[in-house]
Length: 281
Image 1 (tube, rainbow, N blue to C red):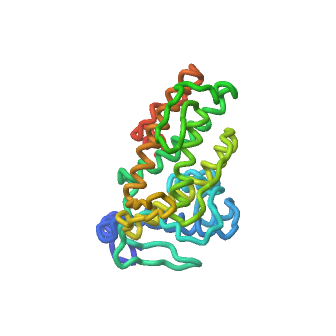
Image 2: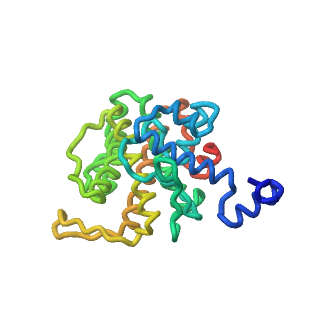
Image 3: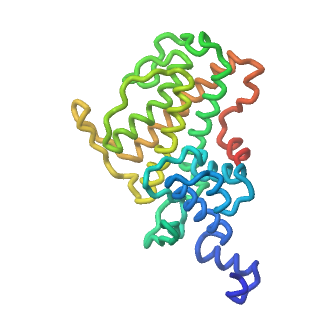
């Protein structure tokens, strides 16, 4: 491309980045990942998609895909929805082999604090669920702070099992409200079931927030007629609500896990987004 523009690779990259807000290599990588998400949703195998996206190994592709979308390729659902990554230039993949250029692109960069907090929340919860697998059933369900409630309307959260359950359930309930679905009914909080629920809700949660951001819908209002009396919620405040209470629950569980696991908890860091991002890169 540089030769076709009669420029050196260095100057071409600089001019391209200045004009599009993204280096050519980064743009190509992002668009190919968007295409990979579409291909996975149509039923193609992870291996086929990885090599079609230009990766030398499935492992390398899986790491890049997980960093971009917040979940592994295997968790991509079959829903026919856009899975566009943030791009200031508005250039995106459009199936089956086209590009779509938004007239007035919206969306945040990967370094935007909201984006970082969303992805950190999902991955930190996954890490805590994994660590909880080291507990006995008694440790997992032991009442540690009798009567503790984080949100009064959700009931007690006095054990690791209850807090982890509500950590997942909060996203499930808000997604049901946003998508106009029935509220999820009571479910068990056995650890394997919670891990499965978390992986499923993580995909929908990140897809939903990306779509809200892309269309600039942070100030949209959701009116929940099931509340008595009906209540209205600004979408931006809903996301802030979920992130705020999620952080509280994660740090609470982290403290309890450390008191139980002892030396086995050394792999649990402090839950700092700075250190998480360093490891992720």
